[in-house]
Image 1: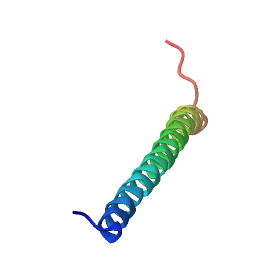
Image 2: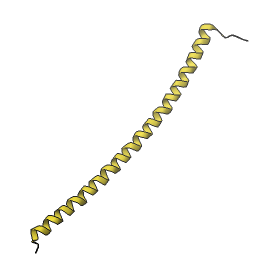
Image 3: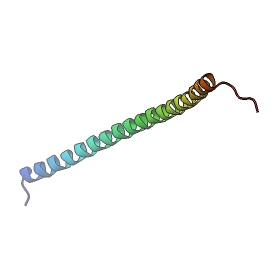
Image 4: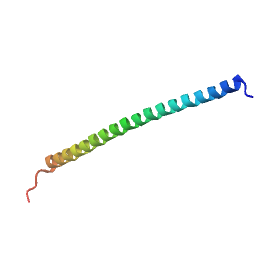
Length: 73
């Protein structure tokens, strides 16, 4: 028959598997949260870049008008 050490070994393996599963689930949850935060930051930066590009276009237009004057057609 099986000895106590055999049952203990199987129990230890089972406990390790459960702990590994818990650790893996926690790590995946943290990664998912980090990914969501990163995507939100990138979205905010994309909006800021679009605003700055618009401002640059307006400033270029203003500079062009200042240098060349306003031409009425």
